[in-house]
Image (cartoon, rainbow, N blue to C red):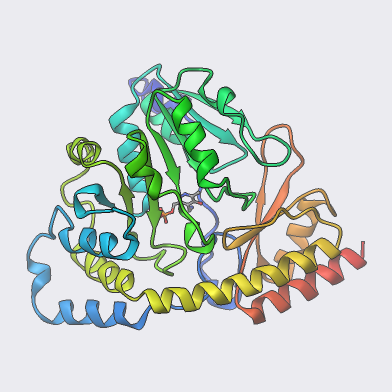
Length: 355
Ligand code: PMP
């Protein structure tokens, strides 16, 4: 069926295609969408089970997600208060809310490239002009180039995907000072990075930080993310979000996970140790792998990504083949358990040796 003529705007959109979620995920080694290989905190299941038994699902959820906002403030400190937090249905929802709030038709939305592919779609939905600012060869950004087109909104994934690289908070602050629009620092992977830009929110009024429970807290299936900004920004964004954007079970699970920082740290340390091992081994096979601060590694410049992707898939190992205009394709590989990493590395070794 063709798109009706009264939707020309949608017809022009490329749309966003998320990473593959295979039906037989239990029998393959799934390293393609940066999920955490470890289970979430056991307290999440307990909180959800209790709510299922006590009849709470009859009622609407708390539209203000009060308990989760308080848990976020407890978790981060750094001057964060519940009035500085908005909770979303995944951080993608937070990014959508911000774009809806700040960008209209014809406005410029700037973001670096190569980065998170959803950013272009967010611009397209608003009928905005996407301005893609190339990273420098060392994955840093020229703040002047980022501000050059006078954007109405700027997005920056930090750590970045697919590179895994990270700009220090001082460099992000420099970018924010150059802009006369909000800068969203998308910290989906910051739980693996050891530092973040949350402190900048108190320093600079235009900085907005988004976080997710999908990666570091192992809750991609629960769909919870949050945004940290000045209270007056949050008040504005609250007008734009759906009233009940997060359901009761997700809010309870999120609160439990956010409060179990000891568990989060323990799985983070395991992912980081496996990440170091994977980087060294994949570099030894001839790939250029930037130092990653996320739960994935970016493999470019080595044996051809397409054929290696296919050969891995034949061995039931799924990674992400990523294509960006003007660059050869690369492989983005999620950090799995040690056993998954061993299977991946031995398969990669065989594939590269057999070429
Ligand atoms: N930002 C970046 C850079 C991501 O890679 C992802 C995961 N696809 C997200 C945000 C969104 O994650 P979620 O909606 O699961 O919170």
